Length: 322
Image (cartoon, rainbow, N blue to C red; front, side, top):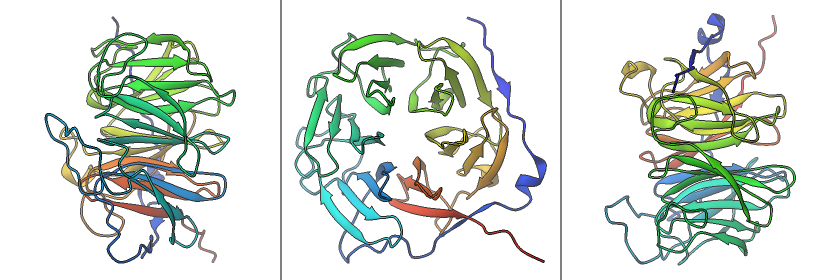
């Protein structure tokens, strides 16, 4: 299979000074409310930030059999950083992806359970796909599914994921429709599809993590193009905006110089890099294994960190007037 991958163009002036800055002291969580590894993040139309976290559990092989006792979803007010609600206790084995659809439903993937869940904002389970704890390669099973992207009609795509290296399409009712992808470096192949989103043009945009690129497909899974380059790094999570921009979080590629690792990247619809912000490190505005990224209704950016065990908020800098 021919590899069709394009080195990302970029606007040189965009990298002289980042266009986004971290919001200090956000969030303002109660004392003792630990998150642990923050695997997924999403923001609804009410500017509520949903964080899918592991509450002290760490990745292991094999995974534990018992669900996490503590809450695994924290709902935070985007404006104030105050904790609004928690849920998800005694339900999940290894939290991973979180997405929010146009109706405000929360979609979750659990790589330990090999399942996908659609939940209400309050945590009520509305739809479950996959067999609990049973991996598989057919249309009714997943093998460590990573993320979900939902269309306006309620149908959705699942990146499946660590083992099956495919993308699956389902109807709004959860009926399997089609799939694409095998393991490899070619066009339409994957080496760990880790994040997935739909852009303003209706393209399916997939973080092909270990191939260190982003692939774009039409709604049927036909390959369109791929983006790759040192300013992109190793894409873990993805979010899109109504104006066609794409935001990625680079988890840190060993093929990129250390000072360029672990940043957030903003691209336009053509794949041109418009901004990069953040870097590897522990300080505010830096990242230790950024795992997912989300955009609020006001354009603010939220990044969930795995090793860093936190979620950070970034806002676009205001223009300086002379």
